[in-house]
Amino acid sequence: GDSVTQMEGPVTLSEEAFLTINCTYTATGYPSLFWYVQYPGEGLQLLLKATKADDKGSNKGFEATYRKETTSFHLEKGSVQVSDSAVYFCALSTLQGAQKLVFGQGTRLTINP
Amino acid sequence: GAGVSQSPSNKVTEKGKDVELRCDPISGHTALYWYRQSLGQGLEFLIYFQGNSAPDKSGLPSDRFSAERTGGSVSTLTIQRTQQEDSAVYLCASSYRGSETQYFGPGTRLLVL
Image 1: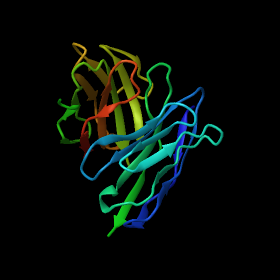
Image 2: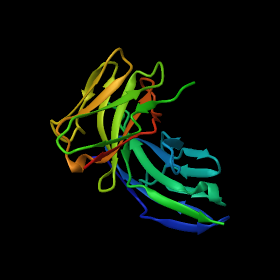
Image 3: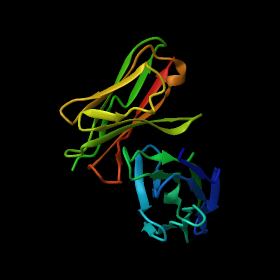
Image 4: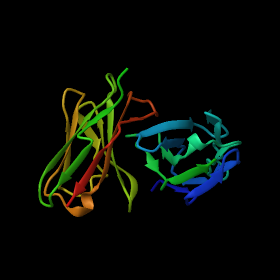
């Protein structure tokens, strides 16, 4: 079945550091790929998405590129801030049927000032 | 406009009791999803509604779990004879039909003693 594997956390960085959170997937067909973020005490929010190969999703300084050849969707940010501290989830959905989301295990990110 | 709302926000119950969790989707969203977020299992899909019908119930973990949706709007997830392993955060999400973007509610945190 479809699955998503994320870089294990927790990840701790200093402010202004470069961030990469790795995500790879296994899917039949051509999934859409997502990064969701869960800030402390809040619900899941869509951070960015990409719907086809070579698409780049971006939002709030974060970027991720849909790489079909490596089945990856790594999340990057050039200079993180304390306010980026959260749990990040990589997810996929297939276009057929329910379009339900299949999530990775989540990566807890802490940014220290 | 208003987002997805869920009630109660927290629920503590005794093993063996039944619980009902409620989800109010965004107005006009025909698709509704239930997910469960637990420490051991991460984020798992439970059930998908399109309108009032549930074409995908594949994630419900046992026959103690059921859900319904009425009027194409509010949904109730019912857990009968709760067990300690049911303790988790239950998340509801909604989307427009055919849209890949799901909007999540804040969740109901269930603790079974």
